[in-house]
Image (cartoon, rainbow, N blue to C red):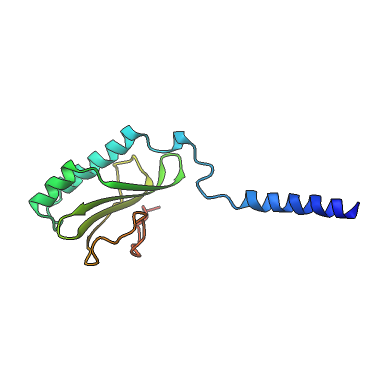
Length: 143
């Protein structure tokens, strides 16, 4: 009888441990994620920003590419329509435009974007899961 109890408690303990090891996005529902329309709104906002930003070291051809080519998008959700977002455009001459933000992903007020233009001399070997892949610090919105 004691081996049956031990087996039961071992199974119960293993089950509890597995349940406790879920990812941080486990509570995120489809309703909490950006819809395809909302993703397009974010991308359009960024495109307008890039088009107007004169201090960005981009050529006219690169700016045109950003306006026409869909970027790679990665989102790590922390709540409903909130989290950390990265957009990446692969530019000519082994360059990459990387834009990141955190917080309310649909808010355009006080949007806290981090912009990086990366020269990739290794031939484009940046991982697709690029959020923070290069040690970038993401600026957090003021509290």
